[in-house]
Amino acid sequence: MKYFINDDCIENQYFANCVTQVIRERRSVYADKYFRKKIPEEQLSEILTNATWAPNHKMSEPWRFIRLAYQQQVDYGNYMVDYYKERYANLDEQKRDDRYAYLRAYPLNAACILGIVFQRNHAKGLAEWEEIAAVSCAVHNMALTCTAMQIGSYWASGGSAIEYVKSLGLAPHEQSLGLFFMGYYDLADMPKPKRRTSIDLKVSRL
Ligand SMILES: Cc1cc2nc3c(=O)[nH]c(=O)nc-3n(C[C@H](O)[C@H](O)[C@H](O)COP(=O)(O)O)c2cc1C
Image (cartoon, rainbow, N blue to C red; front, side, top):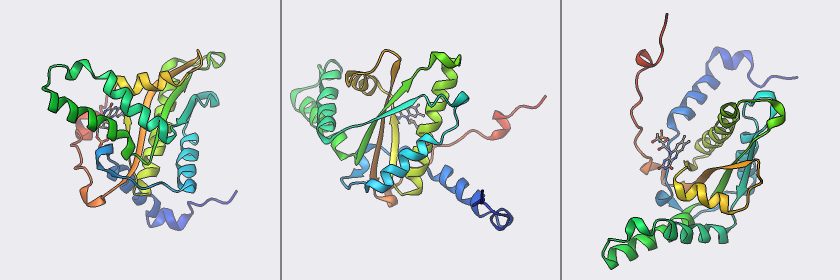
């Protein structure tokens, strides 16, 4: 096998710098920042293929992604309005209508929304956390690929996202882990980085 990461690249740190840059420039970019531009199919295919390259114990590959059709994006907006009805019940009518209009329009801004499904595989004897960790790695591979393609993305795990994916019809061994949003946005309006705690406080030595 020919290695792409050859000695030259190692010597000049080219790939290490690229990886660091992609990791540190990834942001959760929310759908109210997206403009409605489609992601070319080849790029979407690369994003999804990179998900499948995530590490996973015993090759259980415990993920499935449901690509929402445009009509399902519309449905999800309506679903959110219904889901959050009680939360907004006490607002005055105008504010409530504005809120509902916002929720209905929100998913339509996305170029693509994926349902994130965890497929439990009891036969391999893995702990559930190992498999959920593998799904998280897959989702992060997608997020990093999006960053490298200048596409915004984020993982939505709020109640409406979890429940909506369930409503799409999951098998008994499947669990909803929410939605993965993707969309183009104005890079000049990239969200500010959120401060990270120093490794001095996160790495202990004995
Ligand atoms: C498993 C997971 C679930 C998340 N769920 C939500 C969510 O439901 N709503 C939300 O606004 N952000 C969600 N996020 C994004 C986090 O809020 C975000 O990663 C965090 O604020 C750090 O910001 P950054 O991603 O831009 O570095 C989620 C992230 C992860 C990893």
